[in-house]
Image (cartoon, rainbow over all chains, first blue to last red; front, side, top):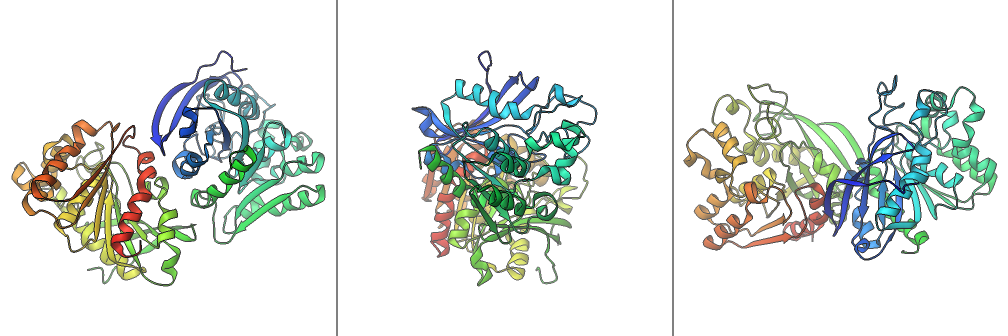
Length: 284
Length: 284
């Protein structure tokens, strides 16, 4: 996969002696054009560098993390690339795709849809786990040592990617993740449309269920703001803590008084996560 | 001024143990409601802290710098507040106000307009130099030690504020400033509308002209990307260097190969500027 793909830069800015670029490419998996944000640290001018994949949350694009997280400073220091996929297929026009913030465009939920009309495009799991890494790692001085993290819907994405594909990632973390989507409104709405009405088919895309069924050799690190307005209804990190306890999985859950769901929270703690991933990637 | 004013928080997020907030208040000077972005470092919970005023560029609001510059980390370390005014009056609806990115809304140019219809609202100089500081310094644990900086149109604003009011600011810096607006297209367009057709009336709002006429006891620090697409036509920092040389004003002009006009450039070097201002403010 990725052998015939081109990766076309559509914008590029120097940043901390490396470069932030947006690359456009045709996704075969999603059957549309996609744009990804990529930070290459200065070390990438001389050799391939390890990479952190960052999965963003609802309504985001490939740009939010690059603009708002302030991660490039430490990524440049460590010699770590950062790849930010978009959060859904784009340029398609499916029925209902653009009507709500938590379904369709901007809300791919990092699953492989099985239900029409979504299944023709909404295969974000295969895209972020296989196709995009194959493209960027063959075209840019990136990889193959990979870490993964994300925020909210993207925190859910990071967890399920690492739990389902533990050999593809050396470390995983999440900010404010949706840990148990099969049991909360965001997940139930998205999964019923993308995966159908049988909740048994949802479990392979739910971090808590995956942990109970498969365990995890990788430890999990989660950052959660205690003033997050989505905490009680959508996030419920105590469910993850309980699943990890029952399955004997190591969870480092850091609850931060006063912090909310915004990028100001992410910016405050992203440096800790980058250094955590750097150690797993062998550059810390 | 500011004695009867209220400052209403409309959003607040914890950030690096301090807080980013947007405050709405009625401006008498601009005759409209305005929103300002303010970062209060953790030290402000115990005592008033020195402040950096940041003036943003064309098309920006009070939010761009807070979202994209990554300045809160070092501001929290130093104990420095940051105040980001909006870039023009808002909520008015003057003829032609919303038709182009470089005139009217988002493009106040930090001058006091003398020409109808602009003069009823577009008095951004008095707003950022007097009214806004009076409001925030009386309502929040901020000031009175002040520094000023800004980007592009806001770099022009920072320079003219400090050159016209050298006793109000302990230090000044600018990123990619419009140093000689009377001689470049952005400035000529805006000044002809706001200040009238006689270029003699524009000179008091032009950093190069002010330096030649008044000199400056304050040194100037300017950061400029050499890959900035506006460099040759709108910015021309060599004009500032020449004016400073002729007037015996100290200029530290740092030209950065490969960097463009974006916030990725600002984010890369903002820490240097905050530490520079901190020394002048007595906290570095």
